[in-house]
Amino acid sequence: MEIGSSPSTLCFKPALQPLIKTSTSGSTCCWRNRRVLARSFSVSYRKFVDFALEETRRHTHLVPSPLQEKFSSINSKDGKGMLHMRSFQAAKIRLLRSLSIETKTVQVLDFAVFPKVEYDVPIFCANFFTSGRSNIIVLDLNPLHDIINQQGYKEKYFRSLIPLGLKYAELLPWGGKLTSESIQFFSPIVIWTKFPSSPENYDILYSAFQDYYKAWLELEARAVEETDASQISCNREAQHRYLTWRAEKDPGQGLLKKLIGETLAKDLLRSFLFNGVDELGSKMFLDYFPEFRCEDGSVNKSHSIVGKSYENRPWDARARRWFLKNCSCI
Image (cartoon, rainbow, N blue to C red; front, top):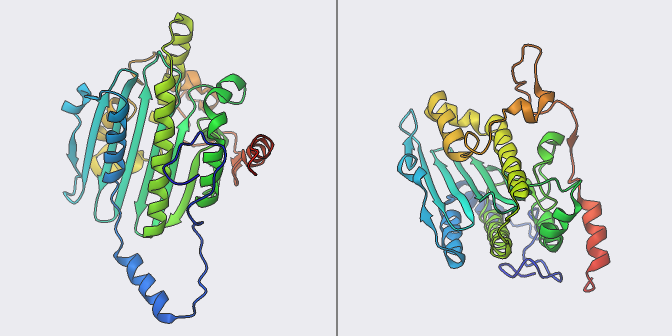
């Protein structure tokens, strides 16, 4: 599948090359030029947000969220960094929001789209962290419901996206250990990767973001409003459970506290980034995740209690078997 084509197409040919490249030239000058390019290359995630907003407006009417009045920009405590926030809503979208952080040493994008509770569409999630020459990336359509035990939900939303996931699994290799507690919130097409900064890698990431977001918009456009009260309640609790986990265990908390202080960071997390954690339900973190309860009743700060982690992509073998069986073009 060429970059930018429909992710529902089963036959595809990768149009990009893998991240790790070998040189056939022994030219010292060539490698010196590459090193200079790497040092001078800078990252900005603004075009990612601009693309998402423009593409969303092609599908639906976006209006500013009431959150925009309170959350628009915050200066870091040292005056050397800036946090920019944007938020919108639409007919099927409860909240589309972005947080961009730019300092002299760090660039961050936290972009997410949460459906209204009348829809069981996955949650679009993009978390990009760049510091110096290293990048930590998570890009996914987070399933709202359990894809292990609810086969129908997985078939409904992810069956047609397996080719897209396989394509970028080659271009953006698995980033290393991921806890079993975290993996439950990811889909089989999740991109979890780490790579050195370069224009080539940045272009691959931008193409992945475009393809994944277009795929999400297609799912959102086809989604039918739920009218059954029990299913709406189920959707609401599933989204609240997700928000509760993220508000408590999101790895970006430390950076936010360092940049803007603990009080502002907590407000940004609960009222903006994971808005709904205090509105969509009354359950607390330990109600959903009792295994994290300490003897004194507090929440264990560890990111894993089970202690199991995934060194490699856990769905690879199964996804490839399904793809080879169902795609006649390979």
